[in-house]
Length: 443
Image (cartoon, rainbow, N blue to C red; front, side, top):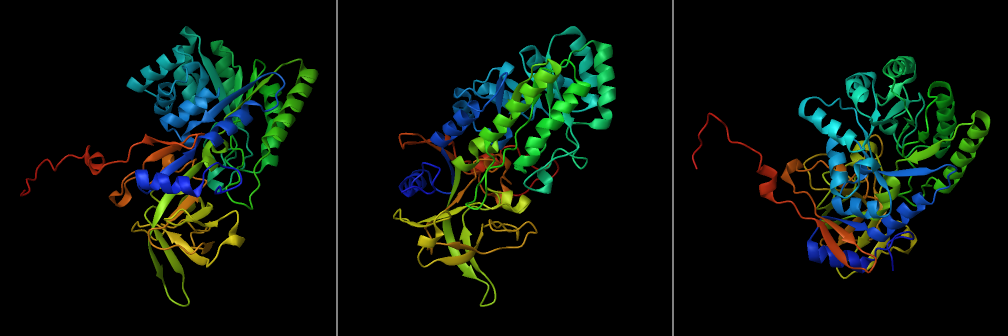
């Protein structure tokens, strides 16, 4: 029996991992990650497809190595992310760096060397371009321009990266200035990028293809690559509908084919998904610490040994994640994908142990707690939070209340598990702290 209809993880494997490595822990379904990578590499295309993994979703070394093995490059959001991608075996010429940083000093030297090694630098502001032009006049380098098209979409307002409320990219009113700088410097721009948001309406993503083609025809005569970013909508919950990447690929193929007929220009397509690759391959395995109630007119609370410090998405976005309840004997007491079969179900608010009222895994987008139907667990049983492969371990409120960072475990296709991140120690929390320089306290 599996936890859900799309993954490969069973209750027995959850219990085995929990007993072997302790809880809380992140467990990743490697076969599902491979399946998602292969689906992306098979997306329809007319004149070439570049696929880069948006590693901000989850930059764990072993996952990067698995993803790279399937042929994906990396979309990095910082110099350090680019370093981590390269450390995982991804050549610099398969890495795109898209960042709000404007590196100076020592960091500028690092960027220059990455450019010499083949990194594509995605310029996000006129200031970045001005800083880079002296280098570009003397060295051949791969650059791109991130355009803010003025229309975006995201799973929440804070994940819309394509309109006037977002600082990302070069806004349309600035394009003439950018074109003039490029023209005067003799730099040819062959790569145009726009990422409109994460988890938004696939129809708006489709419309962005049309918008990008118009911008490329009007402003970028040398462009050879149209980069559509990532943000494919994923379905973590049973009632959610994921984007159909085959249909989106077919539409992009159709439109660039028409573009060639109309203009004589050939465009390859690039995409940079992150959530699609890893979100539903990740599980946060927790133990039930306690069950409490705020009274007859209140709520039942299920208290876990991990919460917002391990998965901050409900607090940040009001995001929903599926729950699976497993007894210590390995019995699946409830699955979000088959709640009708749950017996002795409990409607409860799922909370963590942090000293913070927002430490709940069942919040709406206004921060109010919402009870959810669960199998009837007992202290010591396991509650598994699904959909935590993306923007969970990489975006934690790590060490709040001095709780330790959870270990990470990889489930292989043969059912074996491997530790891919050691559990943090208390000494690692405090290693960089220095004592007060003027006080001497008694031992």
